[in-house]
Image (cartoon, rainbow, N blue to C red; front, side):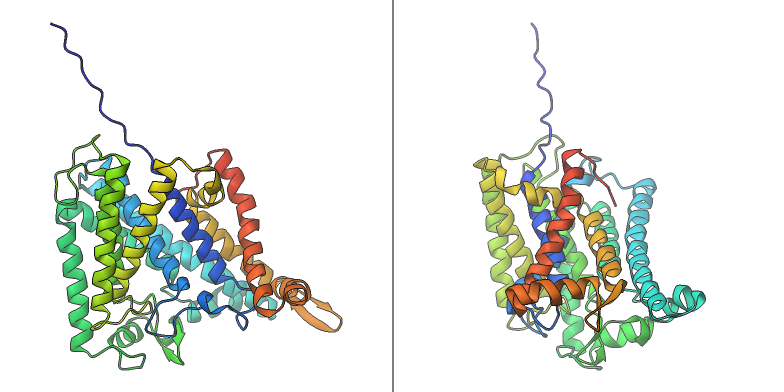
Length: 400
């Protein structure tokens, strides 16, 4: 009797995840680079303290995508935790942190050279005294490393308990210290000030308060792990609590239903928790984690339905180009802006840099204050796409 062996099912790449990541990267570039910070439409501003605007969604959406991708990546090794894996995770995290510091250093050095500072001041003294230790890239590096280590150490089925522990502990800390307001008595500001120092922190409302600070990294790690839970729903046949079986995954309709239900529950839980712990990006509150993960998950479910089930893919090439090289393109955006900000010239007796000239002399006269400012940001997104798209077409993936 001849026995037919069925080959293991290959894990299909989820195009919708690349599209969500691409939308997020394009959004981050858009909101970070207006033509003028004095002329911005309200939805493109961050909430002053409590609350959430569309702009407050782009960063947490990226962290969410990072968590989903993390689960997919480590499932290839069946979540086997060993020193070699831990070393690779830590090295990658440190690399992302160093990239963030390098970009900050590069920007400060350029500005000091333009001001006429000597070589040592521009390249060493000033950056050493003023570099911001924590920011977007350092947070991504720390969070990606810590979340991956926790996922591997505790295994996927125990990840929900890790998330609950991190968020509950953070809520207790905020309650015990009564750290709900933006002031110098907020425990987040106190810890950052003691560890980092005033000169190396972001300032909000005239006080040293870093939205990417040390303590608020705790709920951000939980945020990334929520993304990993969605990865389980997508690629684990038995869901979050089931045992991972390599090569087996649910079909796309099951994926949509699972992610939709999970995300809707997360969203509702976040809005309920908002009454006790307000939605707040600067503090990365637990309610902010639940609400933004819920919204990201709902958008991912919608994209799975549109792209992976219905097969409507032609419209999404623009965002896929960003989604396959997200960190590289985001790095490039910062470098572009730094360079355009320091190249100066005179026009009709007034001094402009490249970016301000593009807004003041071109976009503002043509489109007005706010729309001209938005058009500048959109133009940068388009220029970066002109770099991202050829890389995508040639299948060149720059992994960071």
